[in-house]
Length: 255
Image (cartoon, rainbow, N blue to C red; front, top):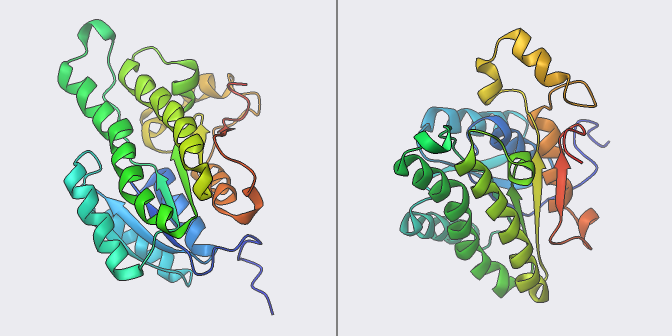
């Protein structure tokens, strides 16, 4: 008898690497891909405890995976992490570039370090991961890469020039890689979340949240699972004829 809690989409036998998988959207993506049958490598930089909690949740649901520590902004560390995973699993079928940070501030007050750290993690980190993983995907003539962008990268955000620029760059990189890797049947797409519950919104007062909800046509904040469902679709055979696309998961905030 089929398990009604498992999604119709299956990733059985696939190996997925999710950067920044310890919490929030990354954790939801890890759990969703694992529930579909993928072996999930949960990458993290700093919080081993949170990453292990994600892995525990995966295994509690009957899935399998491992934690994989490395800093995506360090190209040598990325190469080592990917090499370790390949040695264990033989291939990587799915890469989800979710690792990201914010260092908000007005342009006139933004420090060089705040610009460099955000761009290094959110944009260069995705580049290093794509470069490392694409080599095995090219050899295997297939794979899926999903980059987690942001509405800030499409519409801009005051006080987030570094974050918005990095996410806009990620969308451009998605489209360029989609063209470059299509002959090898490697599909590269992006998911662009709007305002998602958790993370920064946890620090807002209720009146601030109400003001934000009023801007969203659907009248609510998104959930990490909303984003994870779009990622799962792009990782599955249901999106075999899609590459270079940006799927917006924003409740209509930006159309």
